[in-house]
Length: 528
Image (tube, rainbow, N blue to C red; front, side, top):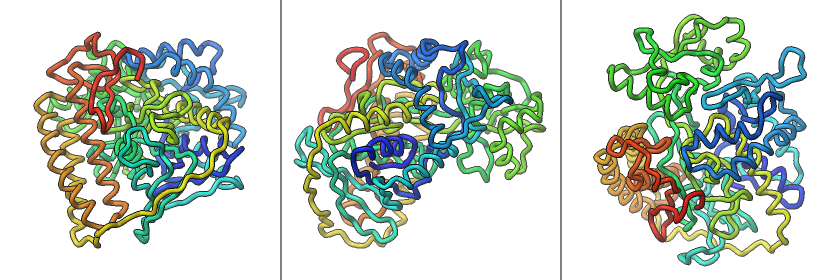
């Protein structure tokens, strides 16, 4: 298991019923994107709501690329998985009587269906999962170790089974091979490929890049979701202001105090994220302003502080009072809807390799993820993947080759890593961001080709470090995003290009890519 967020730990806890599980994480076991999630988990728990309504909202947001069977499975199984979290000690917010969930509402949802723990849902969930996994006798953690690449049974052969991973210890640089009957990618997304992101530092696209190099099939990497409202403040590195704020009545304004979202969509602040982020980006470009404002000052201060205690506290740390002053906000890279193609049981195109959570592309999110469906996917599909893996006949642990460092030597040019990292993140933001064009994408393609060659030479010449691995992975993800964005000659969901501004029926299919056949369109709609 590579990754210790909601998907990884849900898988580990289920799999440990019948097998020993090693959880590899490149930071501490709590250092995950899950822990940063503020909003909550989408699930139809209100008697006035329904699974079918949740399905309809998800399909509408996904702009024609969602798989209805996957959407219905996640929506239908969500309530039971939320109940399972409660048995692990997760304390979700309840109404005053303590009986019913205090359900929130977010953009794109037609009803209140967001189960939350105040505005710190991710932390509450992650803490409970870590406690349960750390206490389990069949689960072992290997912290501060980073996977370099997947080990293949038959290297350079298409479709070769995965038999484990090469791993580097961050403190010492020592590389070892870990063999496994089943290798599970739960590595999250790649927001750190962009200059501005809501993601933690660990989100460097490691699973996507390793799977691509191993020959796995990937899909839809042009669909990068930008969260509309991250705090614009010099001291705030990547502080997201939850969509739940708008769900409870926060208003987005220009710097002169006027509103504008209704001019882009009649749902205004409750429109899906792609629409809101694109509207904010357009207004910032039109006015030349560095940010817009998220205003809660018209709401009852007592309610705001009770509903959003974590956000209020972080704002106070930056000298801001969200009950008294509008907050400066900008969009930032938030979530990758594309990733390693996986089915409802986590199976990828490579035997022995599963993918769960944000690293996977299952057909749930389509071209645009509906708010709070990400934790839902991690809960439901990780449990299904583990149950399916446990039902298969046991196999012996395969032999795996030792790491061969070749003639690599210690590096005396570490500045190359930081320089290339900064350059990739900046041009990806400028050229492959919320609004794209053929010209910008062509510029990005030229730059990434040169940088990948430079990084490739550096990788093979010098000894492996975690920083170098992350740079290599970010460069690979950047290249895939650019190639997929160039290929899709239309605008759909999160992919908007000024040169092809309308969706086209013939493009209502997945963008597929692997190292063998390059980028192409899926043969038929609704299938990978």
